[in-house]
Length: 239
Ligand code: HEM
Ligand code: HEM
Image 1 (cartoon, rainbow, N blue to C red):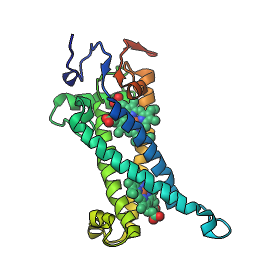
Image 2: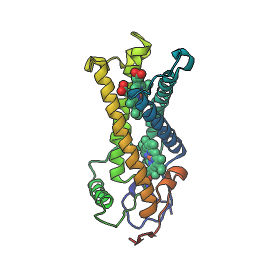
Image 3: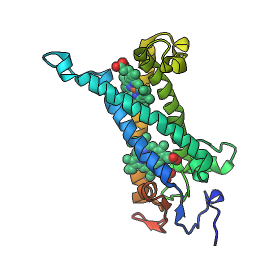
Image 4: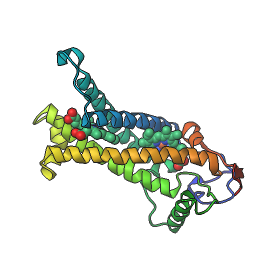
């Protein structure tokens, strides 16, 4: 039987497995995770630099390498998000979920309310979703898309201070300093974004593993194999 996964989101008795995350989305996810982790570590070191080493700076160049790794990861992050955006147009229905929040759908809000209760341990009954659950979807949109764009704009604006007036980075992102002329304030907002991203990452990994352990659907396995699978009960008994 052909099943239209586009309309299956909130059904209870779904047989599965369903092919949800296509290969480009999975590859992007792990590349994105790697680039963000690198950006958080190197960004933190830029904001709280380690003590300088003895000797000529040019002989060890530690801080230069930290910044260089940050810029490379920043470019991977930027190009990755652009390619992921392109895939939202050519990929399957679930490839669009990251960018489109169905605020007009009542079942989106009831689903989100249920997930909030579920994560707050106010109900043990877990729902089944084919794609993202509504709470994850909204969190991913605000952090990985909106905050991601904010980090790209502020990051490349700061980068343009190194490449100089008239460079590509200055021509494309110099407008950030028209909105906020203080480079120090732009740095502060860029740093603040890092802490929001770090908070997302911690909660996201906790929820992905918790989903695998306690809910009726797979989590981590789904973003590795692409297939959503279901079971009738979890370690906490039939739900
Ligand atoms: C999730 C993404 C990102 C995170 C978490 C992040 C984090 C950080 C942090 C914490 C700092 C130190 C701010 C300070 O206290 O001065 C920083 C600096 C910087 N970031 Fe990012 N960043 C991200 C994306 C980017 C991107 C996409 C670029 C573009 C290339 C970029 C370029 C820069 C530059 C140029 C600096 C200033 C370096 C310096 O002054 O030595 N960042 N970043
Ligand atoms: C470290 C940084 C990470 C970031 C920024 C991140 C970000 C994201 C994003 C944006 C998506 C949505 C994918 C899409 O629709 O295109 C996603 C999905 C997912 N991620 Fe991550 N991820 C990270 C690490 C991890 C890790 C380490 C795990 C596993 C332990 C994981 C498990 C998952 C799962 C299971 C999904 C699918 C969620 C669902 O079924 O709705 N992620 N992640």
